[in-house]
Image 1 (cartoon, rainbow, N blue to C red):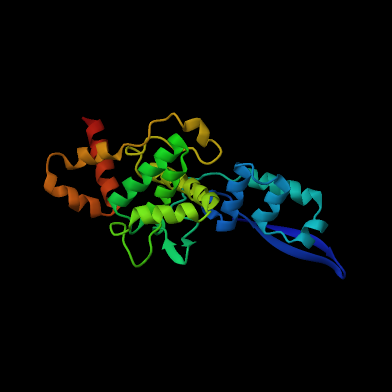
Image 2: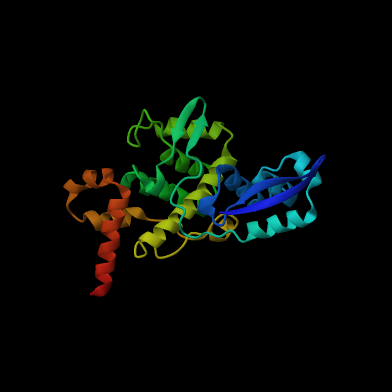
Length: 253
């Protein structure tokens, strides 16, 4: 995180205002992440984006020298995906009076079944651009603390999300997921051999085949059907570690 000092003229001289500039996506606040998604989709112009990204007040903007605007713009363009975004920037969603919570950092508390379900819906949304898959993706990720992934009534939850008018926020969460997936690619390079392209390049990937985790799951369980239920509830990071090591060992033979 970089710190920029903006010097603003005041009635008694100069007033110094500190602005934090993230150096990677993993350092962004929810407001900055949402602003980045908005500019990526062409929903705001560059001036409004700068104001939203840094939380610049109208009075500060009016007195802001264009050099600062140019400098801040250049610093934003240098923000990169460093492969360390292992958390959801938006930890909570508030939908119709219900508080829905994302999995913890490094996908702690996320079962294998929840992971493959969410990632499959994510892949189908990128492939088809259909809103239903986006809402199903969000429904499988954000769970109330009074329920578990296995007890959610998904038809009702998806319908609730469709009526919420939160599509822009959901698309931003999907971008966040692509960054988490890139982090997973660094942790488990044999299981995730390629990187997911973040927002702005989504349309170029529509023809790509969606992820097929069922094939991976079948290869993991084999013919021992008694292990299916136990694997579904295992922590997703533990299962991915097992599969990654198996693929790694297989390549040595």
